[in-house]
Length: 121
Image 1: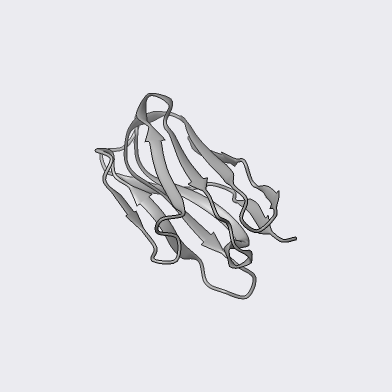
Image 2 (image 1 turned 45 degrees about the vertical axis):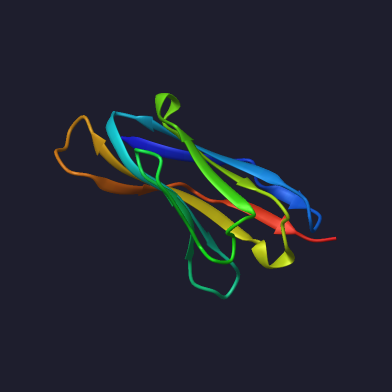
């Protein structure tokens, strides 16, 4: 099986920074796209940023210029560097990945369990 485990969330003051990590493990053959999503209380889950296996990135307008997504293919890990954080960035952040396992021929989407990010003074 495949697991995605996030880390790095927490409480930070407005204007501060956090770095989230998400490591994929298990019977992985290859990973295509990886991404970060977030869900604030009472709101739908929304895309934050995505990155392809080749390193092409895409960001939500609300985080452009403040957040940076990156990945380490050797470690099957995706990162989200969050700078200039605002109270409206408060949410549970989820990573996902399109993974081909050792037992399949097509990609399936896997999700992490989520990590809380709270921006407050």
